[in-house]
Image 1 (cartoon, rainbow, N blue to C red):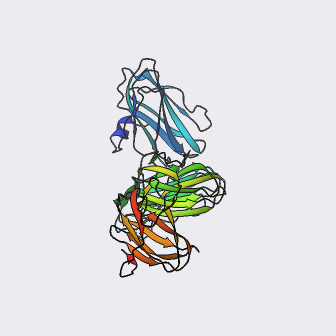
Image 2 (image 1 turned 135 degrees about the vertical axis):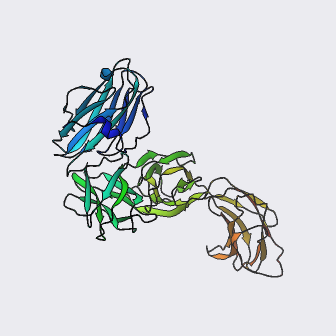
Image 3 (image 1 turned 120 degrees about the vertical axis):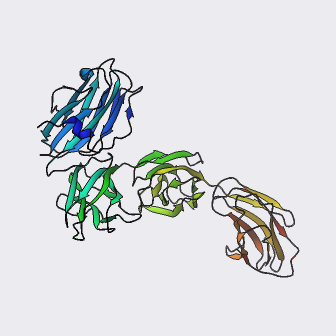
Length: 467
């Protein structure tokens, strides 16, 4: 029997934000059967709107429009198309309200509801897709659907067609589930084999399934199961995401790139040309994506050279690292998989050239650090038995913290200051003859100036300073 439009929009479905056609020739939105209705706004005439939904073979589906503000019903023509592009229905006047179905779907895949507005017709329209029966589907990247568990050990499955190599994540928001963790959520294949670990629904900081990679073409399911044997009704909302990583080039000269992670489980892959011996650093000066992430530096062959954790602090930083191959390198920004993190940051990749210059005993030398990850190598000649005082002043770096060490001609450290600060100077007695080096390593991604002097007048005491 035909679907009653008024019943659809009185049943508690929550509309998504309107999708506007102003200045556009086509509208697109995703919907899950029995999920929230979609509102389309046709700001100009002659626009085609497309509402896509995932359908499974044998699934009965109905489509309804309602709350239309067009002048006449036939200002908008509605048709439904199968995954292969063939028409499932003829045109239906849908500018005010309409009902199509139930249609028994003949194939698995993405169906499209096309709504074509007349040349001068404008207005808004709500579109709802509903389904009854035992076959249930969910549309990746659509709004959350409500899942109700009403019986002990009940299992609810919502299918979607996926292709080999595609990546998917899932999210459940805490609803009326008590006690915590009595509902388990997972992604499984048609035979019930888990592609992901089960995640609790109702537990803090859980309910998120990090990205899984689809092994073969087929139908996969978001599976929710009651595991405590409780008959207490429970409900929550869940959604599945098809995850497509951000992938784009970046220049290793510090040029900033604004990054937005929009999909839970999404990563950003930045590619740059690198050569053997080149030193690069990575800076996220304003990371605002969940609780943290990983910054990975990946070789042209796909293996990892370096990695660090980042947190919601300023800045997040991968220190200068020497590349060991020539080719296309990749910096991966991977938000922590413990949560459905989305948000923004700025990404910068730098080629790091260190400061390397002589320093004259008794004459201060100013080292100007302009690149995050840059070090200074200040070299002086010394004779075994000489006493020297290393004096660090005029620090203009953000945190004022740095490492300063004296390196012997043989490459070993003689002495130094870790996490130095104003006044944290130290004395050394040279135990070799040759070229010594004062190595200044700013903490994290600091830039700014530091004045360094090698004083020939020894102090009365000798100690290693740390803070």
